[in-house]
Length: 190
Ligand code: UDP
Ligand code: MG
Image (tube, rainbow, N blue to C red; front, side, top):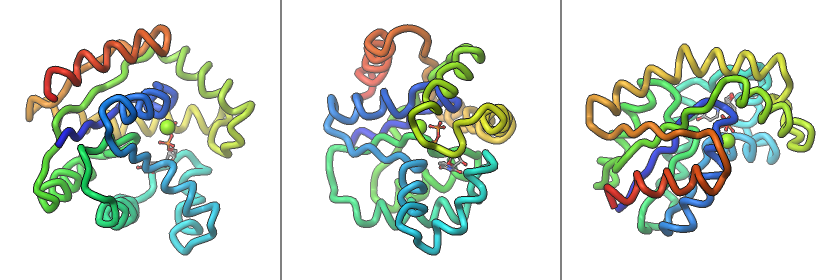
């Protein structure tokens, strides 16, 4: 199994690149952000809980997001592996993910961390906000999301560095150039 985490701040290209990687390597693309938006769209009990956190640019609490992911993984057919997009977002989530993986008799193969200049991130998200219809793609919320990323999400990098699973990727440039850099890293573990 090839289990990849695509990591990086909001606007770093996790979704765009995650889909391309899933296609090339035959992986299931699991975006926890997409799972949450689906809960909201279909008005589930979880949806009503998580909407406020997303709209404020805050993280959905660990127990809630882990519950949603866990039940999704239980239903996922066994395949060649998974690419996790937007998860984990805290150190505790990183620990839980390792536990979930070992329950499924597998493990994380690599984390690729997209490094993008801050101004480029803000520009990309504000541009996406013009068409995405996402309530959290407006300038005030973007600033909050970047702050949450720095304070709560980035520390999870240490967990993977300590386990030799971490690779930094230059996330500036064209989609194709960045994709090539990601594939080069993933090919070292596949
Ligand atoms: N979110 C969360 N936990 C997750 C995924 C998403 O709390 O595992 C929430 C959080 O409020 C985040 C929002 O959903 O700001 C959007 O996440 P997504 O990954 O879609 O945005 P991206 O970081 O890709 O811009
Ligand atoms: Mg995304």
